[in-house]
Structures are given as structure tokens and as C-alpha cells.
Image (cartoon, rainbow, N blue to C red; front, side, top):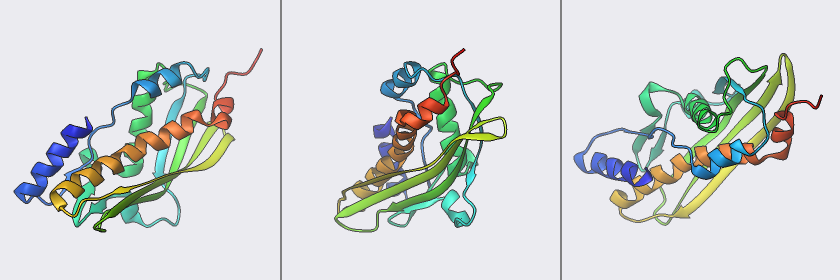
Length: 191
């Protein structure tokens, strides 16, 4: 999937198009089997939005060496994170729109630093809440950071940056799914 995104991004760069869209989220086998075996109850996924006080452009786009990178299908990046989670949960049989347990999130950081010649980095963070009715049973900010070597050549560096940036969504969600407090909050109560 990421190679296809890289080819698409490279084609976009070479043809002079101005905007690249992040590809649709593809759940990994590890994520699906991990969720399936986690013991959590099926979850509903409610609102994912930009955190109060965050800059609105944080939710609309990032840039890789001047090339705008936008979420797919006119979404926001917070909606992209939400849809990625729903895809993961559905793939694992852990999604239920009627569940009394629901997940909410606020996007607190969304950055791609790819202007440098030798290094690039991405930061993605969100405040996740698991709600049982009106009561929060889990409330935590999780942060995913990565840096990598970058090429001097823009035609190599831009698609590589987009791939690394896109991976942060899967990595942040994997961090959430592996969090013991999250799993405990989502475990059905003992009878």
C-alpha cells in the first residue's frame, strides 16, 4: 500500500500537481489480530475533532517540502484518525455503533517536518477518551513521534515523507490499542 502511495506521490511531484492526498487507512494483520485477542468489548466511535486551542490548519493539511498533503476525500485529519479506528475495529469484529462504550478523541498535534535536507520528522498526538454514558473511564493523551533520514532529492524525499507521515496514524492507534489502561477500560465488567 505504501509503495503505491509513494508512486502516486512521485507521479504528482513529477507532473507538477500541487496537492497530495493521504491514502485510505489499511489495518495491519498485527493490529487486527491484536484487537481480536485483546478481550475488549465491541466499541462505538464517536466524535474525533481538533483539540480546543489548536490551530485550525493543523486539522486540514501538512506540507512536505512545499507540497501540500491533505486528508482523503475532503476529510479533516481528525476525521481520518476516526475513520482509521473504525476500519481497525470493524476488521477485528470489535465495532458496534450501539455499544454503551464509545471512544472520542481530540487531535492535539499533527506535524510533518520535511523541509530539511538530511532529516525529516512527524508528530501526531491525540487525547483519547473512552466514555460509558457520560462518564469517562479512560482519558489520556498519546503521542507518536518518528524521525528518519531524508534524501536531498525532492522526488525521493517527498513520497518518503508522506509514507512516514501516513504510518503515524496506524502507529498512534496501535499505541492506544496496546495501552493497558485502555484495554482495562474496554473490558466487559465481570458478573
